[in-house]
Length: 174
Image (cartoon, rainbow, N blue to C red):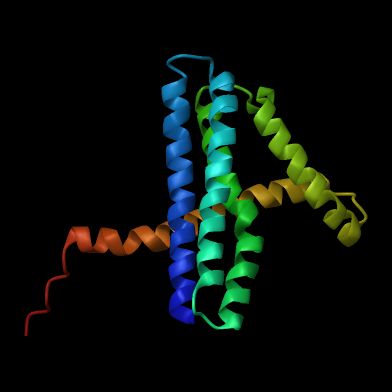
């Protein structure tokens, strides 16, 4: 059970890193042919759909596996909770590129649509919890948590690879 959940979380981290890097690369390539905002609007829908598809494949694979019902429910619950941070990965790549290009990402129709969609999802939750007075803080908190979750999951997957690449630690002298 734990091994399966760890494997799925590792795949989640790899998907987060892959979505971030691939979206960033695709946007950079597309900027050779179009304006940055146009490139973002072309790349983000494909990346968001691909990222959601990757998450869905992992969940479906678990649901069809011979794992216990509890494991399946945990993986499903984790997928629901982590879906927004995962979908933030390609959007974060666009935001980073817009920042370094000194452009306003808010001109992107897809970014604006993503933000509106998240707002429509989070605003009722915020209103229910805190009477809707601090939605901007909730949005900022979402962005921060999504970035931290993605970074930690990526680091947890990359660290063992880095340790193997750097070689074994020298044995202490006796």
